[in-house]
Length: 57
View 1 (cartoon, rainbow, N blue to C red):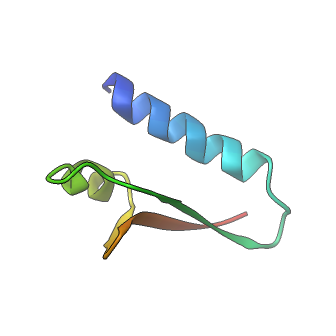
View 2 (cartoon, rainbow, N blue to C red):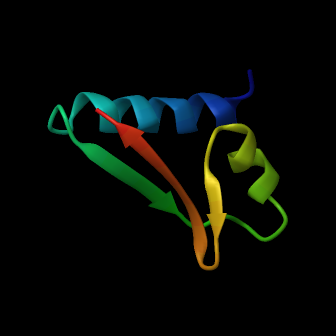
């Protein structure tokens, strides 16, 4: 697992641990052009102005 994957997974884990339980949370960001595939492998969806991932807490 590379450093980028570790960082993204840490941020997602942080959001899960620090959000209200029983809710959905959307994590969003901006991807560098051409790097969307990296985020797709981590469960993010590509949207017109970036990336997002919905998680259930």
